Image (cartoon, rainbow, N blue to C red; front, side):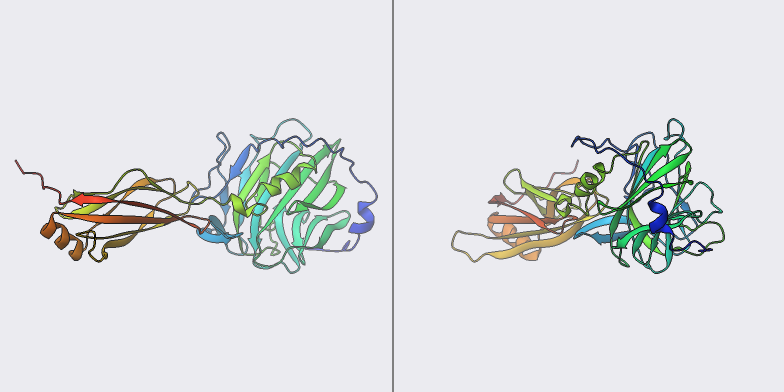
Length: 361
């Protein structure tokens, strides 16, 4: 990439700056496409096209983001993503807003974030030495301060506001504006992320866990609110698992003829793309004064979006106790841990009786 106009950004930015009147504190409109990479490349907003890979080797992974386990799409260097927004864009000239949540392994030099309509051109959005930078082939770099670190999750927003045959560009990192200037170049209908222009090598490996697209230029006042409502801006929004006691436990005959305890507790995993961890234990004895023993314990993985009654097979001690005494007083405990890492715990107690096997006909 040629950088003959490197360093012109500060002066050029003052030549023609877009003025956008701040609106009231009304909520920002919803995006027309929202990609959260829960093991798929589909938008959670109906009607939007799928986002596609650029290059081979992109892989779904689980990453810790702001203390939250979330699914993401990891990409090697020189790979990226592509989105056909032609069916989402309206009017001419085009105004739009793009918000991406991601991390880059390398933020030295220039590292591409968004390609312009001309995929052979250097112009577009980059991270440059930790700064959010719009490189304009005519006026050089326009950027903010060094706020992006390697392998650190950030939320970047780009507002493109059409003005006659030019475009006002507003760049944000974690809700804070980094630049505002007018460009001769626009982000085209074939949105390309992270991959440098044809023949270019100024990109980085990394991972992305959310991409959103609006078919209008939001106002700068909307962006801090969008960030504050996001996982990065509001870590407490990370969903957790649930455990709820609905009734007393009971002993049941397992499908293979053994004896299990239906704890009467339901564990639920949020539909956030991440498997939840569920631990189940049953303790008890044969009489009020008898010493409590572990009668069953185990661990299961609960898929995202699933709610399930917690049932566990009795161990040898539990089976022997029920067989000998015919009943036992037990306490069941279920601990379910979801994306936020905080266990939800529920208990149920009661007397269970030795179940009777069904007679075969």
